[in-house]
Amino acid sequence: MAGAGITELETPEPQNVIPDDATIQVSSVSKSFGSRTAVDNLTFHVRKGEVVGFLGPNGAGKTTTMRLLTSYYTPDSGAIRVNGVDTQEQDLATRASIGYLPENNPLYEDLLVSEYLEFIADLRRLSRADRRRNMDMVVDEMSISDVYYRPIAQLSKGYHQRVGLAGAILHRPSVLVMDEPTEGLDPNQRITMRELIKSLGQDRTVLLSTHVMQEVENTCERVLVITRGRLVADSTVEDLLKSAEGMRSVSVEVEGNEVESALRNLANVESVLRRDTVGGRKRYIVSIAGKEDLRPKIFHLAKKSDWVLYDLHEDTARLEDVFHTLTSQEETESE
Image (cartoon, helix red, strand yellow):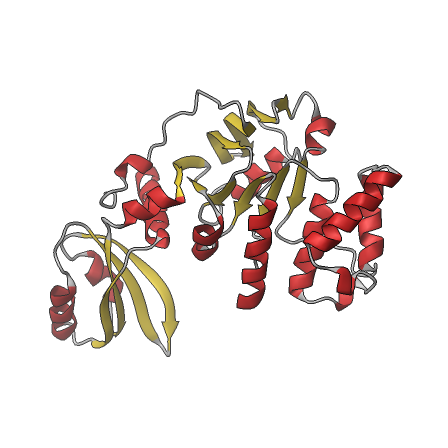
């Protein structure tokens, strides 16, 4: 059963009409590995100048899709176009239009930052004039002048990401694809990277994969959600957050037996999301359909079941709740 107010987002309309300013066009693309279908008839587009969040649970097909976009993989069926050019027909031309920052950000640790960027410039076959101009621009954009002549192995995680991003945009691509760019960063570094992504999106198309919902809310204009390789939502962040206003959830922190199954059996409970334990105590987010306040029922259930109740409060719905409802609904229908 779908969460209140988001039913219309669960089945995106086919994007048959491609806008003139679309820089990424994915049309009925599928990709399988043996018997496992990683991407299943996927269709979407991204316009010029958009910063779009690409979301999905682990194993949903996000990384496979990004590798298809960058021509690392070839689709089994369907077509991908970058700036109107088919990636299978003109592989090198479309690769030249894309900058890619993978999740593991592979850098040559034994090189200086300057040597690494010169190496990337060689791979991209930049002319002497473009090399000098672009190098100055990315060093300034990424704020890496202080570490330009330092070994990459000595850099912090934050600077590692900046150097990787500098390499991804050194050839001034019109499309930037990033896979978990804030993974492993501390809170201050996340804020810095978030601002960098915003600035990069001012004059290029950005597709950003992340599992951190706060990054999406603060960085992206539109959200694509996939699960099991299929698109289940395509909406602006604003509309997704508005849809969350119709959702209700309760946080529960408790000690006891068979807690999750008992919570699921309560009337009007749509889903129970297990969170990390704290001091051995179990923690859950209980999503509710309708307007009933479920806290009294949970309180009486805890008393009847001899649970020790540490916390029970109603939460304000968040983008994370919409994401969980959309993806858990798809998982349920596929079982």
